[in-house]
Amino acid sequence: MKFDRTGIILFTINYEQCVRFYEDVLGLPKLFQKEKLTCFEFGESYLMVEVEDEYVGPESMDNRVKTCLRMNVQNVKSLVRQLESLNIQVNYQEHSWGTIAKFHDPDGNLCAFKDSEKFEQQILDYKN
Image 1 (cartoon, rainbow, N blue to C red):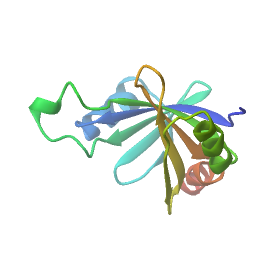
Image 2: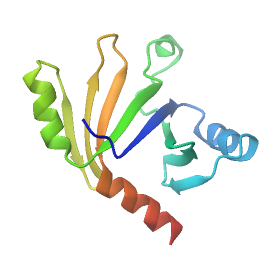
Image 3: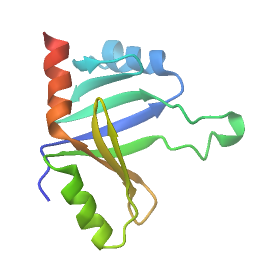
């Protein structure tokens, strides 16, 4: 598999505080920002800070997903077919902001493919 870009997504409850931390304290440059997510340069990768929208309260604090290993690719659908041929369950989603496919590694860590074209367009739109 060839990845165009890789990233780490942090699903956070304290979104504004986390954005300020990574921007002001660590000095990470912004690639782009939307209403509920901010994407920073992170070496040769990116760090996306995103609002955790499935959190239901303290009892789920330890069980919630906090990170996602993101791999930007040219053709999400072809990689979905490849994973499914290996009997890996994939949650394929098409949105106005892009196509993603979520799946888990053998240890249960969340991974996702994202279409490169729309991701790169988000960066260009933010800079213009």
